[in-house]
Image (cartoon, rainbow, N blue to C red):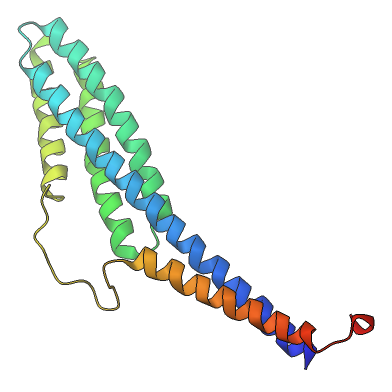
Amino acid sequence: MKKRVLRTALFGLLLCSMALGSTALAQDFNADLSRGLSLTQQMLSEVQAAQGAGDVAGRRSGAAAALTTGQQAAAALESARALATTDPDRSRAEGLLQHVQAANLALTQAQTVSDNEVAARLNAARGEIEEALAEFPAVQPSVLPKAGDSGTSSGLTALAAGGLGLLTLGAIIRLYGRTRPSEI
């Protein structure tokens, strides 16, 4: 009987740790995806500023600055993709990452191509970035939550994990509350 209660308690603690761990991963995924989107928007501003430069040297230096931001965005999106817990989340991060990588390639080329081609490469980078951002509208329309999602899943997960932890603690106290100190 004691072994069974102890196994149940250990299983409960395992479930608690898994629930809290998945909440932390979801928060890290959202933070990395948000950071990647923010850097992508910043990269678009930098590309547009480079396109407005009056000379080729200004366009090339603007492309270099945008490339640095693009590399940071790609790193954040790769991290988000690695932390994604569902296929749709992984797909969203992957889709945005592919556009950012294509823009980074165009910005890299803008620094090495002939003077006549710099504007075309900046335009290609801008197009990729705009396409990526079009997939993630800034203001999402209000929609019903997904099935099983109450909208505050991280709070409910923490609450459920806390309840499971208290249940486990109660089982342990009950197990050892019935035994004599000499039996422990």
